[in-house]
Image 1: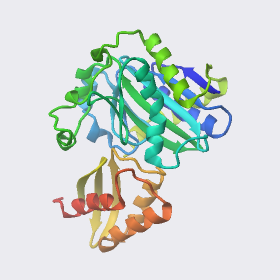
Image 2: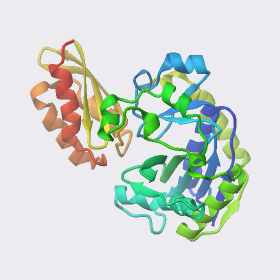
Image 3: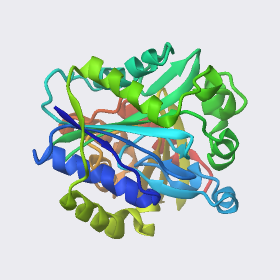
Image 4: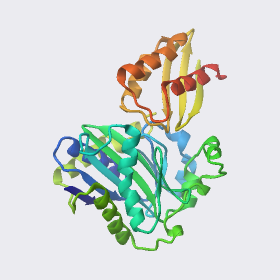
Length: 250
Length: 92
């Protein structure tokens, strides 16, 4: 059995703190595996090793009231808003069936969302290491971190994201785009809405959960965040994620 | 003397900010959109490279990757060296 935690707060720094808390609780065996769905309002999330000023247009972020937070996993910066759904899987390191090979684990852990997208009538393709494409365009990017005896595999899913804000706030190196024969990041990504998915967020979540059920062959039961998890998240928010020291770490 | 360089590997760009004194690396900071496991070992690598003679840096990185069983999907220790090398030869 897994816990399904459909839990979002409006503060992106606190949202990120909860990601670390579930890693702890799952890694310590205080919780069964967790599937979490959550969202951020108008936020850029940078990768663990990234330098904020290099990846983010800070003046555009100020103009657009976009907040910026560092996450625990590596990889590139992503844009979050209410048109984007974040999914996160928290598993103990020794979870049955989890491939030993790192790249293969990215594929295996991405299959839940691939199956969910299939159930929405979309044929998604896993493009190693960490992209999910539909018709050659990116709809989801994933990343993993492995700490405290657990694995966090999390990703974005573009439902109806404001692609103008995404383009204005993220600095993407020209060489990275030219590798994909593109002029702008906007040509590389697409929203599910533009692919004909017109379901409500609640309906999309229901279909996606079915994908996770089918792939991982587990019962996923809706579960609240525990008082201890709330307390740990508040501490991490104050001590880490809301600090300049963390967000300008590199 | 502070210098910066970057290298784009198969999966990810590595930026190196370095400070050189004589023939040695005084400070180094590596950043970018790469994956590096175990994550915290990146900071240990930076510590290891401090005060390292420039001629030894490539070998030190290789040794560190082997000893610590570092995994960097679609990148190798050589990609990290290339970012540092580009910083070394850049104009301050």
